[in-house]
Image (tube, rainbow, N blue to C red; front, side, top):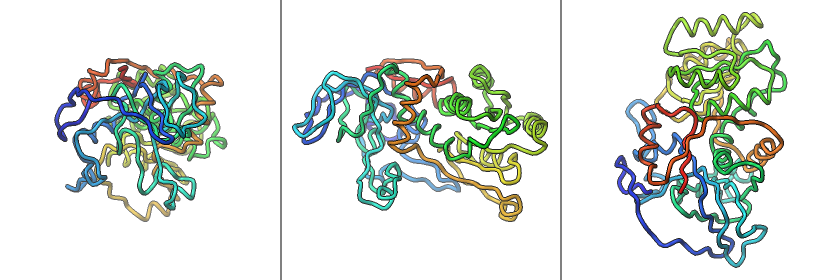
Length: 353
């Protein structure tokens, strides 16, 4: 299912399966998650706010293009130099392919490589029967994890995990409040991970009542409508009732000017805000309170290969991620994206070729 023209519906197209060369591995896709980032790619730009846009073509990506950066699948063929990979075995794919030479790569931040070849966002991805992986090091065995969940660990799971790891979770107590903004696929994944990784009370903010109910069902202690001023005041009271101050940390999986404003406004002194979502826009920040209150705001983008391996091991070891998953056929990719854009998806959609 390909983008043939920016902003237009995806089209089903037929092509010959590629043949792997060198160290390449050809994967038959078993499952591929549908990510909110795909909406921006389909429309052809990211909204930078104040009337500015970042066009996808500025990355050197042009239609026709195949999205899909949350893949899991079975090895069906390898190039002559491929090693440490087993034909017929299923792997989850780490899609953030790096150059290995730039400063971020040298400093352990390969997922923000200067010249990446990210599967599904820079090179053809897994909205397809087959996807090519350049090296076996990007394949992670997921024995004991169904492909429909394993594929989600490549983005929604990894992104949530890496964002939470930027907080000092080990020092949080049952009197602290951690606010997760946005109860979409990433936010619900974060609720599960935060409950397993820290003792803090988990609060969730989302304007959709169905998503708030889902968050509570996964163990959130509170869920508020961030479009309701009374609910926001209730959140402040909830946090202060346990430690006499505000929210210890906020993780924003939406990434709008409104949600960033919410995250910063409810933090206690010394609190930390992690910005993850790519909804878009711009935010005007009053600078003196940033210093007076010693607030910290930090961006987080997906996660490293080592973090993904760590996450897979945790899930294999018993960490439960009961996020709602809806499966659809590959041919339904366009309707899946439309439902995601309409905000009607609770949890994550996974395409099955």
